Image 1 (tube, helix red, strand yellow):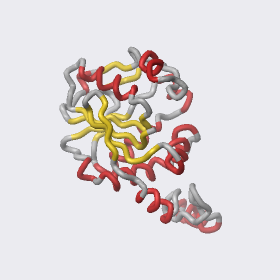
Image 2 (cartoon, helix red, strand yellow):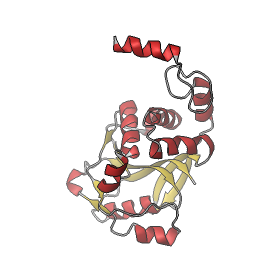
Image 3 (tube, rainbow, N blue to C red):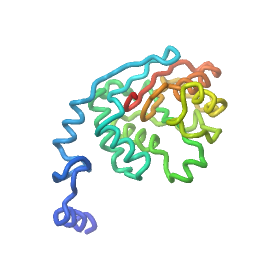
Image 4 (cartoon, rainbow, N blue to C red):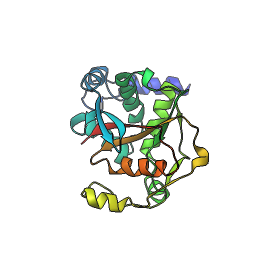
Length: 213
């Protein structure tokens, strides 16, 4: 009954695409915009502390709107769209449930209480549903409530992130870790996470970001 009512309401007040005014039937983004966004993505690789970090977009246009929507404007339904696009572009073969775990960049508990959610955990969960890869949120925690990074230069970012993360090696499974963040500007966050993991002799690390700046 609830599904019938929901479908009826969707028909009467049809969902509009997040990017344009066209009808979006099964998703928050219409098929045309979804395919256009998917087609515009391409694999790019940066190396941080010897670790390969893959990204598929630059932080501008529709991608900027997507990330800001889920990150700051409570548009959690966008997570399914973003995850679907990333997995389709990268290919499911790059996400092996037997060999890899996804490590979303952790948020300090005070900031998460204020925002009510960690968008990276939600995104990682959607990728997990599509690929079968486990999401590990216990291995590394943010134990320092750092300042937002966007107004800081590279030196300030490193200082801001000093002692920000703590690794709990008892939760390491031995699988390759995919450190997962939304955007990478200077790479400071991933760099510090990599350093902390290596202190515990955890070296099977790769990285994934949605967009580079």
